[in-house]
Length: 210
Image 1 (cartoon, rainbow, N blue to C red):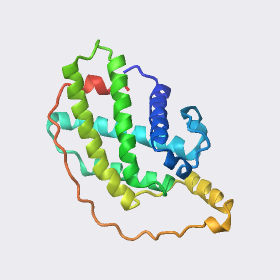
Image 2: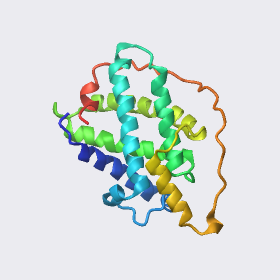
Image 3: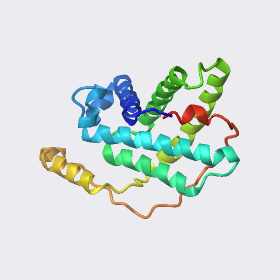
Image 4: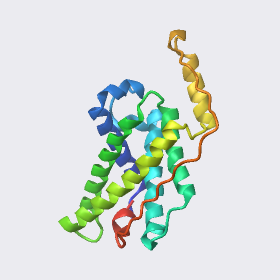
């Protein structure tokens, strides 16, 4: 609970570093010179990818803590937020296939699980508790995947002015031969929302250390 934000960012940055080491063919698609998490804050795209990932996980855990522990269905607006995260990632790194992010989610889960086990403020985490926490995280990640993929495919995100300026500047600095086609955004169909019921109360102490 007393964890400082920069430490949480470091975990997210390290997850991205591991992701790019494991999926080295994606390095050029993110336009990274060196796969070092210490440099992510200076990298326009990866800094935002890390921040968006942390925000996405925070939103999901918060909703689980506030709503699902009471047996209620999650509000549709929450799923729209997760879909927006998928759209953000496509805008930030349009050449990276959405399925590649599944490995990133797995890496994040492993790293956060290790962090929980090492820093639980109520003492050591036993194997039974670890298995329960792992099960909850699996449901959290599966929940994210469904709506992240939907948002990615339907481009459910409008870039900020800063992002537009960055990519416009980057595009004008590229050779003309590298120009790519622009996709028109059409009217989007309504999402087929899936609700996941989680009946695992009493575990918030593990998740709100961040």
